[in-house]
Length: 92
Image: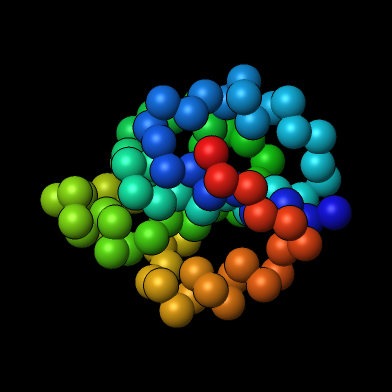
C-alpha cells in the first residue's frame, strides 16, 4: 500500500513514523513541518519520497537552496496531483 503522510509539526519524530509498517511512504512537509527540510532531521533518513511545500517554506523565511537534496520542492497544484498517487493519507 502507498501511504502519504503530512507532517505539519516540527516535533514529529522518526520513532513515531517507524511504527507505521508500510512499503511505500510519501512524506509531505507542510506548515511548521517544513523545518525538517532545512535541518539535520532524523525523519529524512527514512526510506520515503519527501516533498516540501514551497509556499510554507517562503512564509517562514526559509530559502529553497537550503532544502536537503532528497526533498522535492512542490507548489499547491503539484501537491494535489501527488496526493492522488497514494491510497491513504495521514496527517501528523
